Every structure is written in structure tokens, then in C-alpha cells.
Length: 344
Image 1: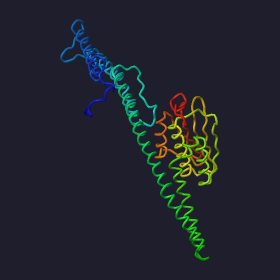
Image 2: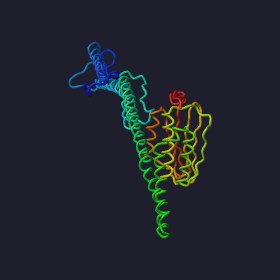
Image 3: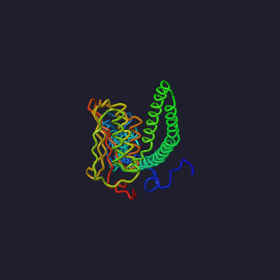
Image 4: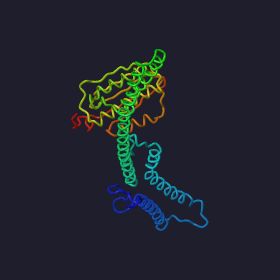
């Protein structure tokens, strides 16, 4: 099928009766102008009013009134019919497919009703297609992370372990001075092995798969505090509703990215991570007391927004200058993410 044609089920710009909005507007203007000219002609034909050549001063008011009526009718019709175009232009300039609430409100204008419906349907379709594409991309990303984590653990980790065992045997048989140097190398290799294991854990949250979301968030906070040196206050409701595996992964990754942003940009000395149920929503918050002032969405925040869309959640970032930053993920518990059917 050619790309020039809309997909099946897409709304058509053709209005009921076979006429599109432009044709309807054209017909209305034609009828209005024709009506005004007809009335003017009838007035000149059947009333005492006349127009001489050259035009007399006493006839000017008749012509001026007729012209004023014609212009007023045209202005009224055009203003009423084309008013939604200004709102449409503004929305097209600011629309963001990561924001799910941007839609044009139809105020009942007959001429552009189909245009408004079609534009909103186009946004719905693009949002759905982007969400689907993001889901495939993020799934591929998670698979690649698992593969890299597995290779780090099974290949590089095992190789470093063999090196450590070899160094231990060498240290036991080496003379004093050489033994000290070998012990230093041994500690360097052991530190490298620990770093490899930490990277593997960040790439593949095995604790999430084995012990669940609460334990995974606890381990994530502890790792953050140990590496960055900033204490994390955790508040996780122990009676959370059951979540699907996809939702748990999204919550974990957003918490992970939120803490990473704190480490990179916030200059904070205290962080709070909470996961609670509030008003039929499961709410994740990552709050810091840093410098705030985040104005534009970077790659990290946009990535979090894309993940939120996958489960129908809404992500907001509040970052006043000097007032710290709060990242808030609200997951509606009436939707599929809460109360998932999957058994752990």
C-alpha cells in the first residue's frame, strides 16, 4: 500500500455528505456573499434607492452600508470558521509525544470539526506507534544488558577469578620482596573483579528477578550510598499491590536513572526514595536537596518518560532553582500494571 494513503481505520478529512472542510467553508462564504449581493440587487431593483453615474453624495450612505454589511458578514464567517486554526498551530508547535495530554478541544465548530478529529487521531496514532517502537527498543536494550552482564560474569569474572587464584599460588611461593608486589597486584585484580560484578548487577538486576522490587530498591539504594557517599532514606510500603514483571522493571529502571541523575548533577547530601500507594496510584518518588534548576529534559529524563509511557504511567519532574529536585512516577492501579496476572 502506498504511503500516500492513510492506514485502515484512520479518520478521514471528508465530512458527512462527501464534502471536506475546505469545500464546506467555500460554500458557506459563497452563499453568504451571494445572499448579500442578492439582497442588494433586490433593494436597488424594487426600492426607491438608486445609484447614479457619477455617484451622488446622497447615494454614498447606501453603498457604504452595503459594503459594511458585506465585510461584516465575511469577517464573522471567517473568524468563526478559522478560529480553531490558531489553536491548532500553537499545539503543533509545542506538541510532544511524550506528553499524553496535548489534544485540541473541539468547541463545536462545524467547518473544522473533521480537521480537529483527524489531528487528534493522528496524535493518538503517532503516540501509539512511538510507544510500540519504544517498547521494542527498550526490550532489545534489556536483552543486550542481560547478554553483557552474563558475559561479564561468566567470562571476564571467571577469568579474573582464575588470575586471582594464580596470584595466590605465586604469592605463596615468591620471596619476600616479590611477594609484596604480587599482593599489590592481587588487590588490584580483586578490586577490578568487584567492579565487574557491580557493573553486571547494574546491567541485570538479578535481585529484582529473585527477591522482588522492594529488595531490589533496597539494594539499589545501598549501592548508591556506598559508591557516592550520600545517604538514601527509603520509604517503601510493605503492603504494595502486586505488579507485573514489566511494571517492576520500569519502576526499578526509573529509580536507577533518578539516582544516577542525583549523582551526576544534583550536588546533594541527602536523598529520599519512596514507593507508596496514594489515591489509586502507585507513586515512586526520588527527592534530593541539591541545587535543582533542571530546565530541559536530558536524555536520562526523556528515557524515563518513554519507560513510563510503556505502562500508562505519568512522570513529572519538579526542580526549582536551589530547591532540590523531585522525580515522581504515578502509576494508575486501575490499569494493567497493578494487579498483574503474572506469578512470581
